[in-house]
Length: 377
Image (cartoon, rainbow, N blue to C red; front, top):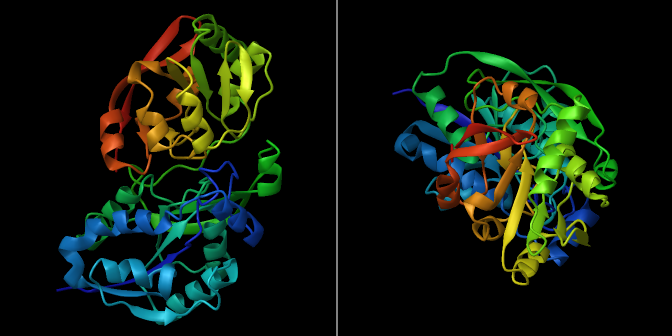
């Protein structure tokens, strides 16, 4: 029976700023502010969800990892006895801990390097690996997921690993490591940069494409989408306006200031809360008889929930009737998915399953396209 040496590194603070509208988790001050706002650390839970897919093959895996919340704890809770190769030097781990752990795992000769985090974590991995060809699988746990080294959901990451173990996956491809300037990001400016490439399993169904950057090119189509949405708005309802450039055009049509990479609340044609957190949205929902959610998809990936809009928590999404979910996108953006479905990754498996199915996407003025939402969680 073949045995596999899997290396695991978890960034315990990945994604901690998402639900509290901090748009990232880079830097000790940001992490402290996120915790002060009541943010929860979710990367361990997402890692566990991924690795549960391997339970039937547990006897074939030798786990190598870092101590405590950087991997040891989640593996122990799953019933493994991992080999701890690195101990973090402080309670609140830093990028230096991630990089040191990666270095040790590579020196130990792991077959696959598995890491949970966001784009900052992917950068840390690449900073150590460079031209090293060891396969990597990223478990998405961050706010910013522009890099192509992550599976599209935690469960998908586990599925990819299982396929590798059973021989279903035999090819590798190079995937871009991308990251953006978080300081500019918080000011509504997307300044993306490519740092290099890492080897990932060559299964496009489960590993995400690199996010398509930049503004939509067809201003006329975007104006038509905005006109359609604004025409149908109910003055008595609450509108939760998700992030992204397509939604920004709708806000411009309303004549309202927009948080490009945040969530704004609109009622009666007025901006009632800018850059709202999950708790802000949940509180506002109680004040209105009905609510609508306006979201777009991430170009090249298809995610409508779970990427860059964690303010739209499971509690928020559950409060919105499915018929009141307004998905907007140009047909060009949908065509770029090459037949792949829209993706939901809310962190709540039951909710993801409930959202699966067909939904009408507003693609122009009085023009809609049916698209399938898939839950791969």
